[in-house]
Image 1 (cartoon, rainbow, N blue to C red):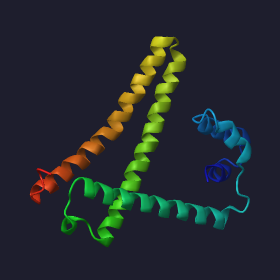
Image 2 (image 1 turned 90 degrees about the horizontal axis):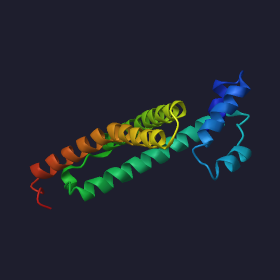
Image 3 (image 1 turned 30 degrees about the vertical axis):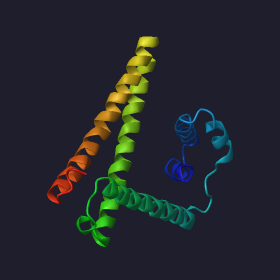
Image 4 (image 1 turned 90 degrees about the vertical axis):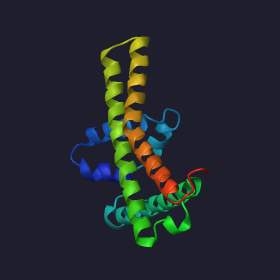
Amino acid sequence: MLVTLLDIAVRNDPALRQHLLSSALSAYPVIGPQIKSSVSPLHSTGLALVVGLAGALLGAGGVAMAMQNALNFVWAVPPRRRPAFPASTLRGIGLILVVGLGQIATALLSGVAGGIGHLVTGAPAEAGTIVLSFVLNVGVHGPRLAAVAARAAAAAHRSGQAGL
C-alpha cells in the first residue's frame, strides 16, 4: 500500500518517489533490497486500495480488541467493568490512532536524531544519536503507558482487586 500511495501522491516526480521508497526500506537492512525489487504499485488503484486499507483497518481493530482483552485480564479488571461493544470499539479505534500517530512521531524524531549524526561524526556522535533516539522514544511512549497503567490501577483499586 505504501508504494501505491506514493505512486498517487508523487506521480509527477518519480525520483522523489524512488528516494522515499528507498529511505523507507533502508530500515530493513537485510531484506530491504529484496522487498524493493519485488514491490510495485497497483495499477488500478481505486477499489484495490480501498479494499486493502479496509482490510488493514479491520486487522488493526482486531489487534486493538485483543490487546484490550489481554490488558483487562492482566490488570484484573472485572468483566462488569470492561467496556461493552460500542465503547470497546471506540477505544480500539482510539488505540489505533494513538499508537499510529505515536509511531509516526517516533519515526520522525528518530529520523531527526539520525540526521544529526551526519552533521557530527565519530563514535561519540553515533552513541549520542542512539541515546537521543531512545530518549525521544521513551518521551513519546512513556507517558501513554504510564497513563494507561494508572487508569488500570485506579480501576482495580475501585473494584477491590488492588492486591492481586
